[in-house]
Image: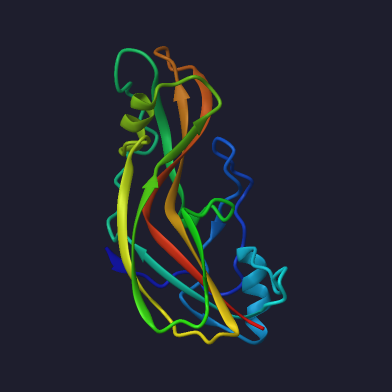
Length: 212
């Protein structure tokens, strides 16, 4: 795995894609610490409250990303069936380094006072897929060149800052994905449906600091 700087400010939301009830995917904000004028923009994208129910005010947001540097090789517009029966073609990588903002893997609060501490996250990121037609996962996996049912464990170390008795922090960890689209066909080459598959690539950590 390698640290990677990604798209800068002006974060955007991708087209409405949902997988088994999971919310829309979003482009990852660049690594760094956000305060001042940028804070409200980043908070809105991440869905962070500017003021908590118990009266704490958002002070800063820190972003950290760790992803694989490998590239998945796919055969685009393949017309030969993977097996006798259904197959997948027209595989296209449509997005890199996106996440599901509505479904963090973990979300933990830490109340001050706290000393500085290195935290190690080791989290399981599960692949996701959907298709408008009934097609087996094995067929989709063969077409997109990765296992659409896989779960992979990703690890990273994050330094939690020291916080005073008037502060608290929230740390959310998300799975990072590459997005692929495909066409499902039957043995005769007729289109059965369209689908989307998400390959797990790493972890995305968003740390928010609040003060009272």
